Length: 530
Image 1 (cartoon, rainbow, N blue to C red):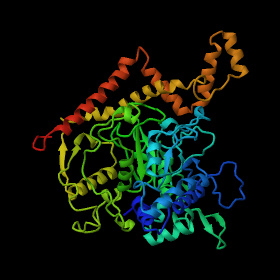
Image 2 (image 1 turned 120 degrees about the horizontal axis):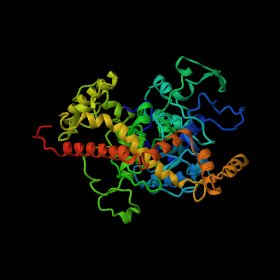
Image 3 (image 1 turned 90 degrees about the vertical axis):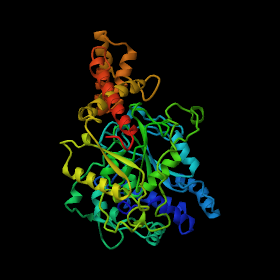
Image 4 (image 1 turned 30 degrees about the horizontal axis):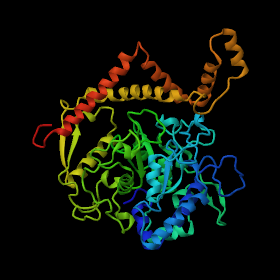
């Protein structure tokens, strides 16, 4: 089954190919959903299509104008009419996190310090455009990717992103293909958008709020790719491109009930991505099903044989990108959304017989020959029982799919290394952030803020700072949000001469130890003791 009532890329492709739906119709539908779930800043409250601040999910920091979106779909409509789509993503509405550059659009990373900075097409954006995908807008995020709740937005033009999961769970009905066609062509809003928000007066107008117990709770969508997760969850895009430094794709995907995929570091180029921690930053994918993420990854990933010159940057790995399990990512293609294999199928026991391939995954024993390691060190005391239960169900499902499970003992992956990993992550990421964000000084890059008279008079009397230093201080004080300031200060501290050996080198040693232990586990033969 698909996550919630989300439309998958496979279903959309089937409808396009059968001429029951056009990319323009789907783009219009997704834009309508985005408009209905976006708080309108400084808008006319008399507009009945404008939702109030409480119920606006605010996935987008920059939702592109409908005319601009439809201008992208015209050629896609024609290609499907002729039966020659560019790729599996041709005509598919996709959103992009606002720290990834799109030509002619502000590249803000949700920070005031990047206000009015206009981007070029990143590597990811170029690949999507070349594949025929329809880019519908830029999504909200924690400033520079620093945060896990979606609340550290320092841009003056956007509001806090909210999690739609309660409304989605209230209306889990899965639409058939015919119902999708009817809804999209009539621009009918899904039940999870309007029925849980407003009473219906019977005259088509928005009525008083229908406050249920769950409606009174505002939940975090997770971060930092908060808007990307919400845009997929509510249906304003079929997939979204985010970035993951320490869980920024996987966490919001989990909290919003969709699929989040962080590929191997370097497997997707970071050219055109605003840097946070360069040795950790990874472009990731959010979508409604595992198959959808696979289709997007196949378009974005680097391929064996590409040289760095061909890729145009040094942020990419070109080795082993075509190595892996040959999984039929189109399982369920051309069928109803109930048969599209998703993460939900992996993390809960199937209600059907394991002999029924259409209900139990793409095919029986589709993971035959794959070895999956389960480190004992990962089972920590702090892990909630619900997570441990889900972990156990996942292991059982992997076994039923043909994989062999190997327990990795604590002598191979040390519990000490695992427990120290989070601290090491924060030391390394903050140190790299301090270095990367040093470029935003108000002089050669980014927004510039002139010091006010009070600061000028105070510092002139103390004779401490020159004018250049005052401009840099004023710009960074106003341009950065509180969380960014905290991490930059922490990073500056651990890079200082008296703390470098104590903190940064120690964190680097922990990372190297974990990497070595994991590499050793992957290199072991099946017959060897784990």
